[in-house]
Image 1 (cartoon, rainbow, N blue to C red):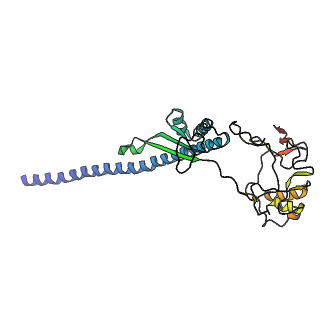
Image 2 (cartoon, rainbow, N blue to C red):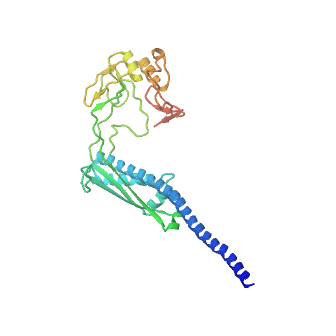
Length: 313
């Protein structure tokens, strides 16, 4: 009787020990699964916000460099860089970035250097600008099971003036006349008399506009590229001129209004091959963007612009 009792005791102890080991293995496995899932989930969360932060920093550096190039003033460039960073941080979809910026959780540093490589901070007049964003902290989610409570990310970007153009290619036979740029340090953008977001009639009459007939009587803002005559204007409007013009090179104007050739050549860019341009679809394919605003923009004989029935001012 005692032997049988011992046997029963041995039989009941074995499964109990195996159940305990399985629970330990299950717990370890669950932790490993949560850790892997956490790396994927939290890692994606971090990379998404890293991209958002990098975009904002890139924009800040470009804005600072552009303002520095226009004004030569590091204080104005720093203000512009920080302003554009803030606008990007507070843009739709950047909730965490905007909240961190609003709570002073991000430190944005704007530096200036007179050389690009190496970038040496402290130059009084740039022209190179570096934006550095640090301290952007994100909470950890599933990776807390392996002891990670938060992630801190940073980003930096450098921008500078664009190189001077030596050659100008892909030229259309139309000139754009404007006012001289403002003096450096005035804080005004060199828009040559034009305004952001305002439509402009490029080809108008010889007495319209504010350029005081500089090209001379009989000219309608057309230039001569590839030869003279309406046929050349038509082909050039469609994109036939494949040479380049050097910066500072003089270009002759093309006298005459040449309405028909201008319209026929320009229309090929919008997928309309009319008149002599019929059958040239393969030679002159349409541009990528061929749609206009709705309602469309129109102008009257005085150069006034309208969108539908509303005048654009």
